[in-house]
Amino acid sequence: MTKRDLTSAANGTRPSAINLIWEQLPLVIDNTELSISTVRRSGAGDPVLFLHGFGSTKEDYTDVVLYDAMAGHPIIAYDAPGSGASTVSDYSAICMPFLVAVAEAVLEAHGVSSFHLVGHSMGGLTGLLLARRNPGAVRSFVNIKGNLAPEDCFLSRQILDFPADEGPDAFVAAFVERTRRSPDYGNGVYAAAFRAKVRPGAVKPTFESMVDYTDNGGLLESFESLSCPRMFMFGVSYNGLSYLPRIAEAGVQLAEIPESGHFVMYSNPMAMWRRIGMFLAEVVKE
Image 1 (tube, rainbow, N blue to C red):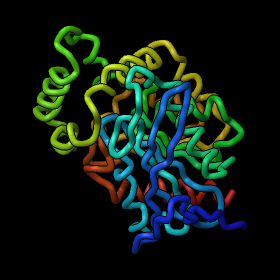
Image 2: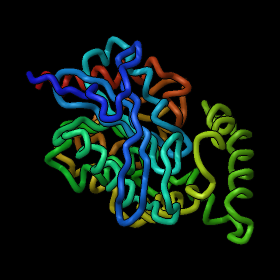
Image 3: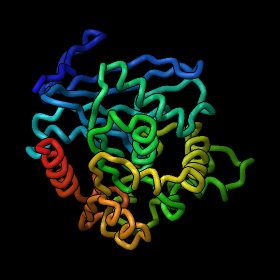
Image 4: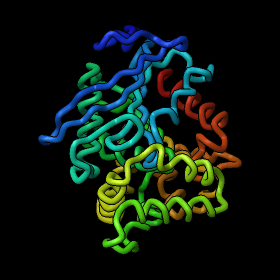
């Protein structure tokens, strides 16, 4: 098996003590300038591309280096435009196809043509659209509570009911307070960090596009039709989703994570990494 080198830094940075490379990747997509904050690790075989959810960052996944179940896998993760340490010159450019184009550009910049995919929430939706456009490139797909049906828009749909004339800062304040008071696992942690992780200008275009694609994009059918091995991961709070029996019948492996809700990486990361590691081990062995 060939060893893919993901530690050759383009800008003179050096590996950290846990063999991670952190870089800013300049891109221009559809005349929009971006600086994408990335993190990566070398290893044998095809890399795992991690896509975070909205209001989160690539650091949701950097504990991967601490789990034996994920040892040896090369990885790539990055902050979406307007999130974390990534910047974008025009927030209005952000939509689901734009986020897919960013993912494709990051993969191309690292010379990756075949990869495993892990995406959470918005990242799961981005990953599904990425897999739909590049079906032959995706070795496997772990979809962590990514949007598949209208019932999944419990966060993003709030933008449609908010008065447009009140502006993004007012929406963020109301959104954070509502989420903070919600009793589900991990919501308080998510709400407390939201303002530090995402720019207000990115909220409206992202949420509106997520809702549109979830309502009208045929996502459930697309996920069912993918030929690669698939896992759908969800916290115990979501074990009543209406489509779970349907996707199980389509051959999707279901992974219910105990003592967690939407944010499994905050509430039960050990169980999350264990299930992802087991799934990837099965895929690589085939």
